[in-house]
Length: 176
Image (tube, rainbow, N blue to C red):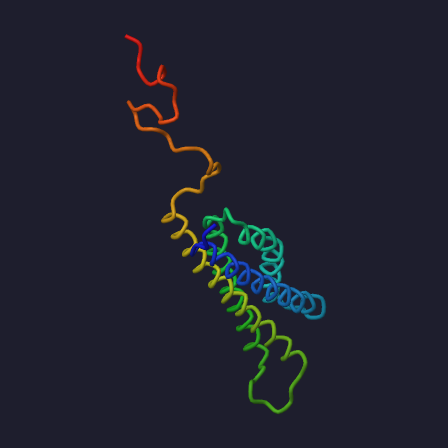
């Protein structure tokens, strides 16, 4: 079996979705802690997006590793890339609102957690964006290589009016 460009995209898609899932798990843990310990509404949206991403990207990782993946997960990647961009913006506003300065000498653990959640939400956005780009390539290459055959041992359909080469002589000629 020949190694095609579509086969080369499968491990790349799997790695992109795996890293997006890992980033979502980290954001989910940090924002869940922030919801229980702090009273802030800006971390609830990233928590919901992280939880939904964690649920949806497990089957997406499995589908991206399958041979018959033909770009079906492109809408999922488009939607989640924009959701993660909004989550990153909400977390960036939350960090700026809490006066966490980058060059302050006193490093508090709450500012470190906020920056960590912000950084991993950006990484989740970046990896879903990468998965979206590679899924576009996968969709493009699956259309160029033709349809996937389910039975490669069967012969293609013969042309109209011609008998197949392995057909008996009495079926090749119509009765007069």
